[in-house]
Length: 119
Length: 261
Length: 87
Image (cartoon, rainbow over all chains, first blue to last red; front, top):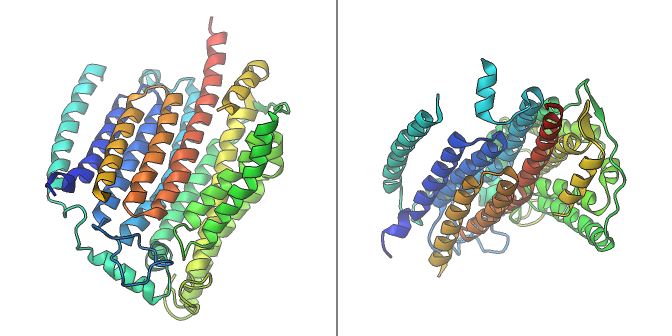
């Protein structure tokens, strides 16, 4: 085994996060920006689960595995990621509701046009 | 700020952040390593309390207080959506026409609906045993309900989905979680401590003490929350129009186009 | 063997996440996000996290894209009316 695959999952998480952040900063449409934010969120799940992985281990569920017979991966990081997937989706919905309101009030979802409106 | 300056700023900041993150990655524990002290302890505690799915044990027993926080975020987000997406004074409701649905689509949708709904409920009920639980099953059950929109039409969906009832259900589920926590306190130990009920036989539905109860409360909250959220957005997209918005002809054509997807 | 599957899934995640950012039209983006959701679910499964995979599958491939599409529809309808009134 070379050293590369051992940092690859972390680097993928970094790449996904930076890609999402770039999209957020350059987006011309608030709906697109919210989509980019959910890409950023995905990066955190990749990082968390990569930290908890263990070579040759199985899922931390003992309904069909005799306890103690096989190593299991870390359940703590899985629990963190799992709740955030669902809670994050509702927060995305809140942001989209804000976008709908912005569209109603100002008739545009382009952040640059919104900045001009303020003056 | 003009776009050029902004791009320059993003590039500099991004490059700096990338360098720092990569440097951090190189010093993280090796991927697939064998040292997981917290994980090992969590597995040990979970087996001691007869919970087969250790992830459910972490969520609803060892870190139940943290899950209470997550639930509060979820509840607040749904509350915010309901407030933001309400019908304002200058808007009115356009009643969508009953739509014709192709026979095969209707048949398969009505076939899939009960199966998907049941799968969601199964996933909630077996949260402490097999992969799944309140968070996942709630989403599955709530989205399953919306297959009715594909198979029949919007009015049929509205009939099985009184939004008010689901809003009440959401609040009730959140309180149920709190009440279970307080019961632990009254029972003599600590808030949300899993000491109230017997741990039961390992790998059966009633095992895990309060884990199944909290799991069910979360399942109900998530299912109600998703139904309320989707109702808000569907109302905005399909029904609520304001003065002069093109509601009938063009909107209807669009309607069919989107349903085809 | 297991290692290879993980590497492939990771690369697929990186590619589809980049695509989800690069696609500027929100309707197309929501479809790419649905693909990203499925690919993430596959990655989580091979990382031995079936619980997370299940919730990612339900949320990422159905709920989030649906919410995005509904928002696009609402906003577009308003935009069209505005353009008609302006001239």
